[in-house]
Each structure stands twice: as C-alpha cells, then as structure tokens.
Image 1 (tube, rainbow, N blue to C red):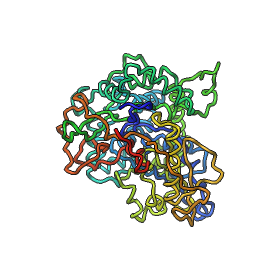
Image 2: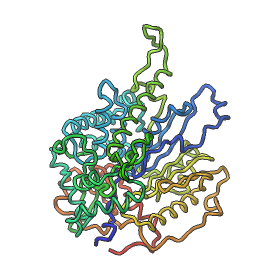
Image 3: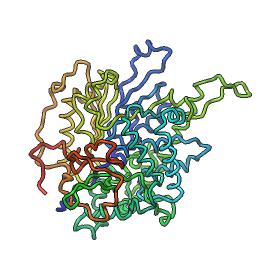
Image 4: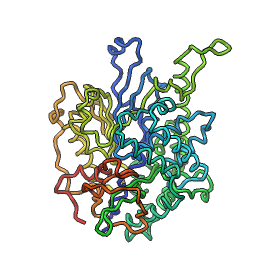
Length: 542
C-alpha cells in the first residue's frame, strides 16, 4: 500500500549520509575547566566524544577544520555504528580527507570525496581510486602494527576479531574481488527501490520529487536544493554531477550492504542498495555555509545550488584540515632542523596525527554495555545520537557521560516521509528518552528543529530532571512504516550470495548484515529504529 507520504521506506534500512548539517563538536561540548587545565599544565586537555550513528564523519571533519579557532585540545572520537559498511566508509572518507597533497591535490580530493560519498554511480578514475584505497585498507586491517604506523589516527582495537575479518571482506569487495558491475548492478537496484517506494506513482515520479522538494524540504529550511539536481538524484542516484553525465556509469560499491530477506518463504541473504532514496545527501554540507554570499537569493531564487555549496564547503573543509595539520606538526617535534635553523614540520600522516586526534571504532551493538567498562564510565564530555539510533538512548549511555557533559540528538526534520505531527511526536519522544537517561534541556540553548540539546548535571537523577518537562502522549501516528510489510524481493534484487551464510537464529526483516554474514551479528536498522520510538499501540497495519 502506498500512503500520501510514500511507502514509508524511503529512509531505507542503512544510512549512508547525514540528515543534518555538520557540527563543530567543540562548540557543542562544555568549555574546558580552568582548574583541570591547571592540573595538567604540561599536558594538552582532551575532549572525549561518543558518537552513535554519525555515519559519514562530517562532524569529525568539521571539528578538525575548526580546531584552530579554539584553545589547543586533543580529540578522542569514539564512533559506534550499526553496520560494518558504515565503519569502512568512515575509514575510506578519512583516508581521502587526510591524503598527502603530493599524492592528491585539493580539488581532486574534494571531488573524489563528493562522488564516493553521495553518488550511486562513479566515473572510472574515481572508481580506480576507491579500488586502490580499498586494497590498501584491506591489507592494513589484519596487521595492527602496519595500521598504527600508516594510519596513526585510527584505532580498531575495540572491534572483535570477527568484525575485523568482516571489515576486511568489505574492503575486498570494494577493491573488485568479485566480477565487474554484475556483482552490484547499482542502476537496476536503485530503480527497483524507487519502484517499490513510489508504487503506483512511479510513472509520475518527477512530479512526486518536485512535491517532496518544494512542499517538504524547502518548507523545512533546505531552499537551496535545486529542482534539477534533486530530480536527477531521485532518478539516477547521482547527486553531484561534476563532469559529463555520460562519464558516470561505474557502480559505487561503497553503498552496498547485505540484508536477510524473506523470499519464497525462505530467509535469503542479499546484497543490494538499502539506503536513502527520499532525502538525498544535500543536507550535510549543502544547505548552510560560513560564507553567507553562497546563500544569497535573486528574485526569490537561490543563486547557488546545494551541489555547488557542498563542493565549496567540502573544499574549504579539506583546506582547513590540512592547514590545521601543518600547524599541529609545526608545534610538534622540533628535533629536526631545516637549513635555515627553523623547525622542520612532519607531514600530516606521521605520528603527529596521533598527538592530535584518534578515531576509535566500537563493537557493533555495544551501546548498552559500554558503561560496564570502567574506562567508559563518566568519561565523555559530549554524546551525539543520530535520529536512527535514538532508541539506544537510555540510562546505560547516560552513565558514560561525565557530570556537566552535553547530549546532542539529531531530529528527523529532513525525513520527507514524516508529517509535521510525526516530527513533533519524534521530538517529544526524544525528550522523554533524554530525561530517562539523566539529561535535562540546556538552559539558554537556542531553539532548533534540527538538533535537540541537553546537559547532564552532577546530581541528575533519571526521570526527575526538569519538572517543567512532562511526559506527553504521542499521537496515534507512526513515524515510519515497518519493513516487515515490504514485499519479497524480485529476482533482480537477490543476486547470488553463495559466500554469505545464513544465521541459524531468527532475524528481523530489518536486520543489518555485513557482506560476510557469518562474521557479525546483525543489528537493528535505522528505519526500524525510527519506528521504535512509537508506542506499542501505534504499530500500523499493512
């Protein structure tokens, strides 16, 4: 059944890009305590951040790019995702962002990043870069010593051995270990998803995309997204067309993931595209800009498109990250002297990166058990939760946040399948979960429809934080349609997956599974996560 808001599965079961603008995490975290700085006069203050479902690393890159504007600080980013393909994308994106300028220029890096991050189809040169980087990462993952030497900013020590094996398998698939486009027919899979999402409205898909853009995204603050670029993305999956349109024909394997589906009464492991086909990757970098001239309008129309703003923002982001890296290297070791007597800065990829920041990837499904480890209890000054992971917010995560720490929750503002009353219900449920986890609304925080901001006091007690915030009943609407009502996949959606072993335990139809299904435990999907914030009496009937 197709509803006025679509089939309800436009968000997908895997999230590949953020549905909110990039944040500077230092601006969201509590200020550095002067007393703690006095105790560590000879040590750089640290910022520990826990991120659930940040997906594409945009917040991390934004934080590094803006670090030069803040007092010196060392960053420890702890990232928890619900599938290993998202972890692999994190690693690939950071490898591109931190590539040495001698190997890849600024413009080439930014364009490669945009195509890999947001396009379903790639140009052959970009596909070659992905294969080379994936081959390199596949060789580094099973060798911790080489990984620490070449990627000092990365820590996989917390992952389980089977997760590391599955991560290597993901990179092997990206590097072309399986035969050509037939292994991942992206154009056919995209069209199949679109047909299921739109149903009887498929033949009028251009009118539907125009409606979703003008009546939903534009009304919610994304006016710079142009009709043509949004329509092109809805039709083909290509969001950023930087070259001749005919050059985009190589499937982007980094958008592939596995799922267990019901097919002819049996559980079938299928690789396909299960990501977003409704909103697009324009929100993360394309609707806000530090340079306000990019948001200028003429005759009521934006002079720049979201694609152009995204390209500008990403280019400046990489430029600022490189400049900050050179500055940190220059402030580091000074034992090597240049001919003129000045310090010789080390390159950004050297051990100086370890002194600047580290990205720690946590095991899948560990959100409810992190507080069991003493090293995580009361450690994090900032907790970020994406809208697809809100169901994990509870007292267990609250115990990991230090007294006075902050909580930032991404709201579902840019999910086009949700109606205004559903967005309000989602926000109300987020507030209830935050209160139960021991947080209260930040005093003096500016109102936002994109993020909900909370703080944790030293004497906070779950459930009794703010007497002015009451528990409000949710309306009888659901946030998304459950994936259980999806029809079984057609033959073109279920390519041969002999390498995948089916789990002996029953799995939900929204389960996530890496490309080697026997190597990791499937976890809940973002689509199921959004639905889980509804009350039990709100489950819809197919």
